[in-house]
Each structure stands twice: as C-alpha cells, then as structure tokens.
Length: 189
Image 1: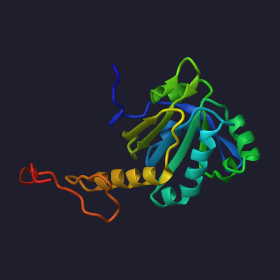
Image 2: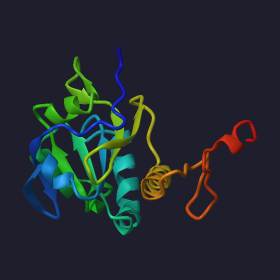
Image 3: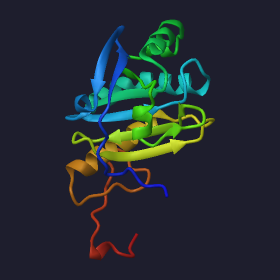
Image 4: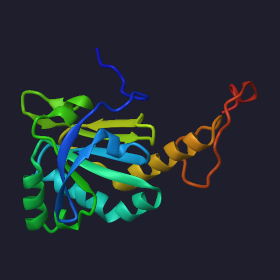
C-alpha cells in the first residue's frame, strides 16, 4: 500500500554534498528553519537529468528570493557531482547544493528508490521550515520537470502556510484571488 508523505516530517540523514566548489556535510537539521526543495534524479552524466538541473539553476535566484534552498539528490557520490559540474556546461551553472546519496538512505527516506536499479525516481518534494513535506511529485524517468511550475507551487504552498483558512485554486499565480472555504461557497464554484 502506497502511503502519502504529505504532512510527514523528513527523516534523519547525514551526507556529503558539493556546492560552490567545495564539499560539505549536510544533515536533516540543516534543512529545518527554511523552505527547501528536494529534487531527486536518477544519475549524473545522463540525458534528461542535466536539462532539469540546468532549468533549476536558471531559476535558482527566484527560489532564493523566496527563501527556498534547492537540494538535488542522486545515488551518485559528491565526487561524481563535482566531476559532472566541472565537465558539463549545463551542470556548471548550478549554485545550489548537490547531495550525494550513495547508500540510498535519503532516496529511501523519501520513498523514491528504484531498488532493482539502485537509482532514484524523478521525485520532487517541497519541505516547509518545520521539516514537513508539503508537495510531492513523482514522474516517470523519461518525463522532465519544469522549474517555473515548481516555483508556482512553492509560492502557493508558502501562501497557504502564511494565510490560514485560504486555499489556492487551479492555475493560481502570485497576487491572484484565493478561496476561503466555507458553507457559503459549497456548490458555487
């Protein structure tokens, strides 16, 4: 039975990462206190993955303006991430944190491990400052994701978190009207 991770707390982890030309250790505790996106992808040096990670890199400043940190995650090592960053023009644009997960701990924590391959599904998770998962999206391996749509969803999640009693309708964009569910609204949409 598939269990939803929505609203659940991220599980403990500790791993090595590559960012800004340096290696560092990142833990689940480092994530708490701000909004974050965990962006899982199958493997370094592949085909769809660099297009997605470059798209995130091109939109990273917009995420940062919202106080959101991006964590890309694959079952590769932090050494592989550095080598890929140093050799690929697309990956060379990345300024966000690239987490290595060679043991698969983080990938399994988020339930996106393809066990028979030892690789991650294309999973996207938006985590609030308390460490609770607010958005989950998983796509098939051949389907790339869109950073601008993810950015729209993050804005909606942040809006709902800061405006109790309001919800964002389909295609909601920042500044647009929201809904306040009530008895008066039932059957009128």
